[in-house]
Amino acid sequence: MTGTGDYSGQRLARLEALAARLREHGMSARLLGTDDPVLSVRHPGTGRQTIVFATPAREGWMFLWAPGGQESADDPGRAAELIGRTLSPHP
Image: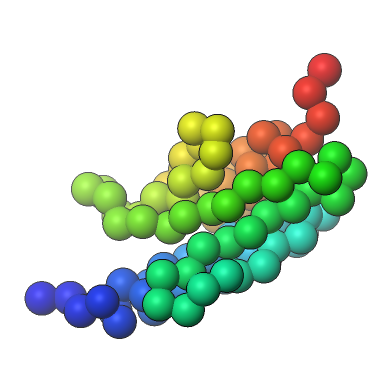
């Protein structure tokens, strides 16, 4: 059986990987919390922000963010692109 600490460590590793990719896309990312961390993301050009959660799912881990965004945590680069689109200016 997996303990809560194991999930926290896995969650943290995934969020840290995503944070690095978000920074490559020009966004700021900051971890919040300790036992159940989340990632606060801000697009400097628009000022738009979101909180990203990493959660276990049936087929691995998923990143979730508002409004309605989700992507496999196995591909933090793709998740960073999608989050960037969410926070970018809309035409």
